[in-house]
Amino acid sequence: MKKNRLGQSDLYVSAMGLGCMSLGTDETHAAAIIHEALELGINFLDTADLYDEGRNEEIIGNAVRHRRADIILATKVGNRRIPGKEGWSWDPSKAYIKSAVKESLRRLQTDYIDLYQLHGGTIQDPIDETIEAFEELKQEGLIRYYGISSIRPNVIREYVKRSAIISVMSQYSILDRRPEEEILPLLAEHGISLIARGPLAGGILTEQGRSRTGKAYLDYETGELPGLQEHLQQSTGSRTLTQTALHYPLAHPAVAAIIPGASSLAQLQLNIAAAAASPLSPQELEAVRRVSKPNRYTVHL
Image 1 (cartoon, helix red, strand yellow):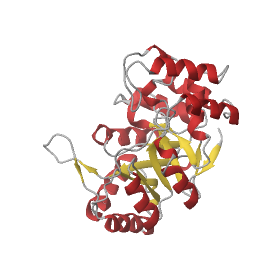
Image 2 (tube, helix red, strand yellow):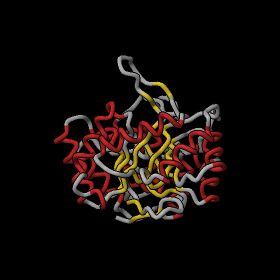
Image 3 (cartoon, one colour):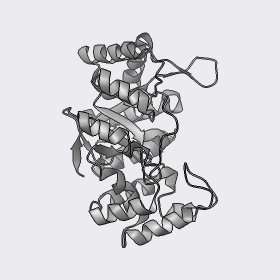
């Protein structure tokens, strides 16, 4: 599988990574998906300390502990669970980040994290303190690089301006084209990569998703999606809907990787096969843009 440079770092990630949130908590099942992904050319795994209360990191750590040098491992921090309480609270403080990284390292069974990402963020955060935490972790050798996972343009702009992030993870798909207007040009200008999550829009942009009707998605009204799916199929000829969906984000030069999830081996294999198709042609890209909506951000906080 093709590998792309992540930002201006020395990390080269497979064009399709594995978003691990949907692996589940059955370790045998999850490990089989991870091992198959690695065998089929994926080298980029993305998780978060929040997923399944840390269990996701533990499962990944067990699955890759003998292949650590072959993998680009990414996780996230900032959502703090309080023992005995439901849910979590947002904590981008330096003290919490430097404490939480040790727990992620323990669960992942590794001495370092390749890409440590802030899992959210607001413009009211102590941004300089947060950046200082990541920079100290780099100096200490506990992380190699850092980035941010966010859909908030104002927050992303602050980190681009004030920090050494190499990547921004954000939702980006044919159905969610919000990054195109503000985020992607900014990242391209500064040599920062986008990691596109949700390229299949929760399964809507798959062959199986063509049977889903009556659901709204962002700017798409109830009942619009079946027609859009049909138009996309017609616009790209012999391509499957999944092929078109996975290759659409990758067509932008600032996108280093897409990270669809997989809850089964069959789903993983279908995604990898689709990602192996040739890139979309300029004509196909234009056709996709004509039938989809250029979404706009409505919240800039």
